Length: 193
Image 1 (tube, helix red, strand yellow):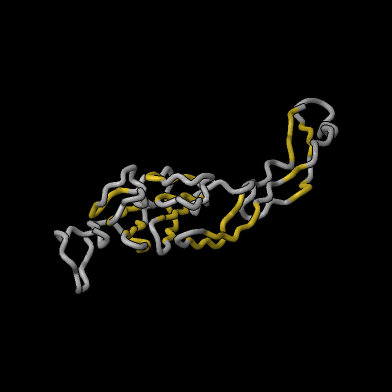
Image 2: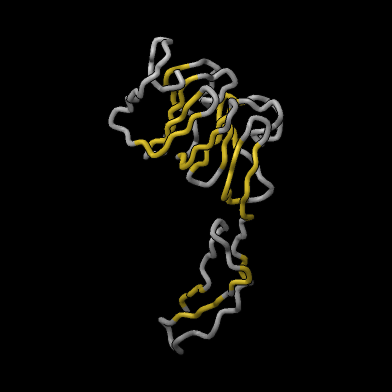
């Protein structure tokens, strides 16, 4: 089953094509006895052993192919030498499924997960590097810094003395955002006067 093809339980000792239909494969990863395919559209297929829910399809049933259930488009797959899988989605969230007896998925407890569960970091974080092993996982990330703005100034004088003009107020950037922080909103506001 881990070859994403029905081999009838027979071993395969020669290269075998995987039928993905018209879908375009972006990447794939193999873990202990399971494999994952990431498609260009952000969906993920899993296959093979699923005894701890590592395929992320809501079951613990081994299968030759299934759809991993993610709420967002996947952009990266991670696998280790054991029975856990980790996915990064388009919004840069990290999700884990499978074996979690030592808390190696980072989801806050030691319960195995048969559906991808979001990893909660201390504050908004952009994960730059991630690696998983049988007993632990490790990541390197950047804390997200959101834009901080000053208070609005008072509105300036009207641009004309007699009807049809505008007046403006502004605010300044006190802390610029980094690449994963919330961007700054408008720095200028115009009002009719």
